[in-house]
Image (tube, rainbow, N blue to C red):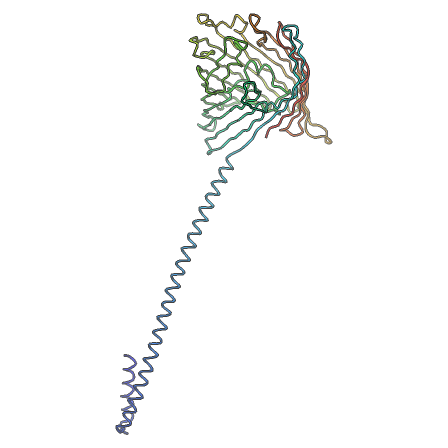
Length: 447
């Protein structure tokens, strides 16, 4: 339309310019035809331009669509990367908050029984035993909540036969919640807070191949129960523990009658257990020194199934000191009092078990070896006295007082790896089934 208008204007102007020369009819016809051809050419150019413009617009639209599609892809990829990073961070965080540890010990015992006259047999001990392998697993849920566990395999092999020496036991599995920076709530399967070895018994932490007999028989280590309670710090180097937990189920007949160690049920479908309470006060205000005392009360140490309810008390006190120069000293005393319920035929006094006690004294000296050697060497001596069943059957069964002397050394090539040797001499104040003299070798580690 615009092109035709311009063409007509050009014709009028041209006519005005040439008005003085009026064309004839043929000239005007040729002029009109020429103008018409120009108009048609302009229209053709216009249509071509419009076509090119449409193609450009289509190309632009397609390009915009491609850009939008690419943006969507980039955004989706970014989301996937972010999700992957989040999952990776989550997995990494879980791993960072979970720890695995453990300890193990291998023993060789070469001990002669000097009590052969008492029961007519010699119970010599000449054996190699992979005594323990323990896996520890812990997890930190957040800054205030944590979990810890120990799974133990004893004597290397567990078979279906009743006489299999092996055992698999869950020794600990508890959760802990911080009530504040100094006070904590704890619940689960936990070690009873009594003695030295019951709470810390990894092989590199104590002298001698075997754990001392006082803490084995009297406390009795290792002793864990289903428990709930609180522990924490009260200032000036003092800390406390207070727990309510399941109690013992001590047999009252047979070859283990009134032996506290035989009353442990390890929270394995434990039945007929009465409640017990344990409290401990500990002082660690001086570097290298630990002083502690524990009190334990059993409402019914024989369990609830027999209808009797004799109570029991255990008191324990210990000191553990190691000077910076390597001199060390451990001392512990523990004492059970078992009540009678004669109306139900329960009388530990008849076999001398109404008061069961024990103590030990252990001086030591630990020092670094010369530079050409590796690690540290520690020497120790220990005297132990405790009351234990005599191991005899029938009417001769009762508790006797044992004493044992151990001397030996520990060699630590690394603080968490130890080689051990000790010699022992044992005796009793009455006829007993076994008195073991000889030596022990061991290797232990923790990680």
